[in-house]
Length: 497
Image (cartoon, rainbow, N blue to C red; front, top):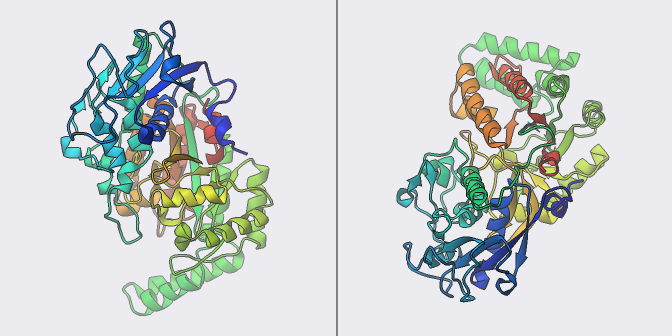
C-alpha cells in the first residue's frame, strides 16, 4: 500500500537540506509546498528551519519575500537586491546559502487569486518565467512549482465544457504554447543545475535501475460491446433508418453471434491488453466501474464469471485495479464511497488508485473528495481533447488544496495521452498518432519522468476503432526497447526514489 509520507522521505532518498521560508504566514503553506515540489525530482530531504537557526557555516536554501505585507504591486517591484534576501524577519541569508527573493506580487498572485496571463509571461532560453525574482536565480522555481503543480490556474478560470471540465485550450500551458512540453519539470531541472553550480549537487531520482517509467492504464467503461443499446443503434438507428442499412443489419447479426459464442470484441480486448503488457514483462492498471447514475454511465456487474476471472488474472499477474467512478460521483461522496466499497468487495483487496470518468475534475473539490475517501493515487489530470502535459509535468506530484491551503495525502500520476482524444478529438490517423506519442514518450524519457497512457477495451475492434490496437502495442514495444520501468499507477510514487 502506498504511504504518502513514506514516499516523500524514504530512508534512501538522500541527504537533509535546510530550508528557510522568510515569507508572510498566510503564504507559508504555498511556499513550503512549492519548495517540496521544486526539489521533488532530486534525492534530497528538505527540512524547514527558522531563520534564526540558519548558521553562517551551513548551506541551504533561503526563500524570502521582501516586506511584510501579503499584497503588493502587480509588477516585479520590491525585489531584494542581489546581495541579500531580506524578508519579513529582517535578516539577510548567510553568504553560503542559495537565495531566492520574491516580490510582494508573487504572494498576491496566490492569496488574491490573480491568474497569470500568458501574454505577459516572458521566456528565458525557452523556459517561461512565471514569477521573476532576485537572488541567485531570476526565475522563481518555488512559486512556479506551486502554481503549476498546485493547479492554481484551474481555480482562477471559470470557463468549462459540457462535462464541467476545464477546456484544454484554457490551461496556462496551452496558452503558453507549451502543452507538449513539461514546463514545470524544465523549471525544476534548471533549478537543480543552479543548485549544483552553488555547490549543492543533487542526484536525480530514478525508478530503480530505470531512468524513466511507462504506465499503461485502461478505463473499463463497458464490459462488452454487444449490449442492448448497441443492438438498438445498429438495427433501429442505422440499420432501418440510416445509410448502409444492410451492412449495419449484418453487423448486428454478426455481433449477436459473437456475444452468444463468448467472443465479444470488448471482452477479448479486456483480456488481451493484459496479455500484451505481460508478454513484455510489465504491469498495468485497470480502472473498473462499480456504479451507474445517469445516461453517461453503462452499468455492468463486477460479479459475473467473466469479470471475476479478469480480476483474478490481474491480481495473480501483479497488475493494478483502481476505481473508475460513475459520471456524477465526482462531487458525491456517498456515491463514491458506495462504488469504492463495491469494487473492494468484488476484487477482494484494498483499492488505493482512482481515475475519474470522462476525466471530470473540479479543483480542489474533486481531489479533496478523493483524499477523504481514502484514495492515495489519482491519474485523472490530463487533456480530454488533446495530449500533453496539463500540469506542466510528467512526474508524480502531491496534490494541493488551494482552498484549505494544505497538501492533500493524494498523489497525482498525470495522464499524458489518451487514445480516444488522439484518434477521435484530434482526428489523427494511425501514423500521426504514433508520431505524436513517440514525441511525448521521448520527452518523458529525456526528463526522467513517467509516460502515462490510457487505452480502453475497444482496442482491435478495427471496424469502429481502426489502428487503436496497433497504437497500443507499438507504444508498449517502444517503452520496452527504451528500457522504461513498466509499472502500475500505484507503484509509481514509491518506485521514484
